[in-house]
Structures are given as C-alpha cells and as structure tokens.
Length: 472
Ligand code: NAD
Image (cartoon, rainbow, N blue to C red; front, top):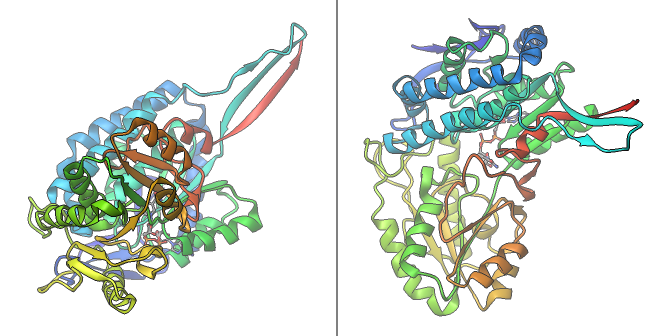
C-alpha cells in the first residue's frame, strides 16, 4: 500500500509517531493509501528547516525569487500528468474539473512570481529635512492550513504570495488530500526552490494544525477551512497575538431579478452551486428569485441541473464528495429539508451504487429561516427563495451569518451597482457565477472570515509594514 510522507527540508520524512491514517477512495470507498500521521514533533522539525532556509530566501533579490515562482508555474502546466492524477485519485474529481484547477494553480505562481517586487512600500514626503519611507518585511515562517475541496489550488493561493514576499512556509494539507501537495513541493525544488523554503507536514487538524498554531517559530497563519476549526485556531492565535488570515465557509446568495436573462441565469445558477460537486466555499446555494419569475425560473433551473453529468468518468461535469463524513452530512441535510417541509424539485435522495456520489438537488418552498437556507451544506444542494422587490432581495441576501460571495442577475446597470454596494459579501459576481480571478481579492464578511487572499492585496497579508524615518 502506498505511503504518503511529509516533505521537510527537501526530503521525504516518515512520521515521528510511526502512525498512518487510512485514505479511502471517494469513488469506491475502499482504502487506497496510507497518510503519515504527523505530530507536534514533525512540525518542530519543519519549522527548524524553514528557519534555516529563511535568511537566504528573504535576501534573494525579489525578481530572482519571482523567476523561481514563474518557473514553478511553467512546470505545473507541463506536469498536469504528474500532479493531476494524484489529486484526482484523492478527490475523485473528473478530468475536466481537474484541468481547470491545475491551470489555476499555475496562475497563482505566474501572478505572484511576476509581481514579487511591485509593492515594497512608498516614500512619504516630510520636506527636505527628512527621508521617510515604508518597506514591507516578510514574517519569516508562515503556516498554511488547507481543506480538501481544491487541494493544490487552495495551497497555491496561499503559498505563492507567501513565498513571493520572502517567507518560508510550513503547510498542512487536509489528511484526506495530501499527495498532490507533497509532489508539488518536489516539483518546486526541481525548479530551483531551495530545500526548506516549502515544507509539507501531514496529519490531522487537532495534531498538526494545532501544533502549527502553537509553534513560536511561526509568525503568521493562512487558514482555509470550516468556521469551527477557524475558531479553534483563532483561540490559540489570540493567546499568541498571532496574525491570521481566515478563509471560512459560505451560504452565498445568487439573486435573479425580474429583468435578468432567464436562460443565462438558470444555467449560471446551476453551475454556481454544482461546480466541484458543490464543495466550494463561494457556491451560490441560496438562489433568490423575483417572485413573478419563480415558476419559470425553477423550470429552467431544473432543466439545466438535469443536463449535468455527475460521475467518475473523465467527461463528467462533477464527481463524488471527497470525504465520507461530508457525504453523510449532506444526506442528513436531505432529512432536515424533509422535516423543514421543503420540496426537492430535483435530487434530494442518496445516489445508488458505490462511492460517495450525491445528486444535484434543488429545494423550493423554502424560507430564509430554515436550516437548509442558513447552514453551509458543502454539497450540490441549493434552495430557491422568492423575493418581492430590490430591498427585499437585499434584506434576504444579507440575512445570513456568512458573507463570502453573492451573485446578481440583471440587465439594469443602475440596479447592478446599487445592489453590489449594499450586499454584505466579499465578492460580487454579476451576470455570471464563477470563482473570479487570481487577480481579484477573495475573502469574507462576517463568519466567512477575515483578511484577503488573491490579488495584490494578499502581499500586504504576508508582510509587516515598517516605517523608516531618516533625519537628513
Ligand atoms: P476543516 O476546517 O475541517 O479542515 C480544514 C483544515 O484545518 C484541515 O487541514 C484540517 O486538518 C485542519 N484543522 C481541523 N481542525 C483544526 C484545528 N483545531 N486546528 C488547526 N487546524 C485544524 O475544513 P474542511 O472540511 O477540510 O473544508 C471544508 C470547509 O472549508 C468548508 O467550510 C468550506 O467552506 C471551507 N473553505 C473555505 C474556502 C474559502 O476560501 N473561504 C475555500 C475552501 C473551503
């Protein structure tokens, strides 16, 4: 049986515990590999390796650091056959989705490699007797804790800006999806990334994740995952005054106004909650529809959802749920929806056959107070809620603990900007529902987290700003 090991200081390192976690195949639920069950001792070895590598990496001329990152980007593009299958096996994602995610992974290294030296501070004019400027210093060793829904993409999003700004990284992938990031670290070193600059420690959240939070050698953490784990890490961080970027969950509203192009809105809304089998933090799972359009829209939405092809084969639009626990959680929400009195117009019951497949599901007869409208399900499940007028749509959209993303479908340009300004969410998508771009900042309002990944803004989150005041 394949054993997946941590990658520390440029080497494969077995866990100090000697223990391994069984990794099951989402397409068959059979054991496919064993993943190192690391501990605080492994985190300690990784932090020492990162600290040893830091000075040289920090002092490398930024454009040279950037060149290594763009070389990594090129290598990732050329290595789709090396990395993609590993991640495909771990997650069950079909080939088409995997190719898109590999391309995004590469784009992060392209983007941050290209801008490694563009935002290093500014000069503040205090007259001829002073020379005053700011500069951005790296934190040193940054911890990166990752979920299982888009493993390399999420990893690249945090690791590329952290490295571009001169930090070293200790990263922990989800114990359910560890193999592609370990192989990525090897590939990055083949591209010239010095050993110790990027270290991958495998294991569970309570063991390795918490140890990353507690380690005094780590000066900043980027966490992507659930609200619950984000809060646990936040408590540790509060004691240490450790800066965190938290990218958490969502229950994003996708609003279809009466003047929308209904066909485009139905297709876009279907994509918005089923991409990656709904295992997408920004998924548009609360579809708000102008009451007068409700029935016509639902008919088109059901048609668009019925045309999806969910399965393990290469051309499928999306695949299984990646973890068994998540699969069972989604099935529980089918029961909760029935108890709530909601009606499934498509899907709503477990798929037959092996593997953790869930049919794309749309509920109507839903109010925004029901649990299926308030809680993140993290599967291909959407609710449709009617609204009466613009103010009502904004009120319902904002009545949520979350605020990661929101969609607007409308041909009225005035309304688009008015509503975009009023929605409490970190990303507004108009007349398409997509993941945005690596160049656009991403992050949440309210319980969806704080700090921003992506875009030039991320550089500020991986650096500390210093003022230098020189009396001339
Ligand atoms: P999770 O919180 O269970 O795990 C995320 C990571 O945290 C894993 O590596 C896990 O091992 C680790 N972890 C768990 N408990 C921890 C603890 N106490 N201390 C430190 N680390 C700990 O989340 P998941 O189930 O892997 O991922 C799904 C969640 O991630 C969803 O809520 C989803 O919305 C969220 N997510 C958010 C974004 C975003 O950009 N906002 C992107 C993807 C996923």
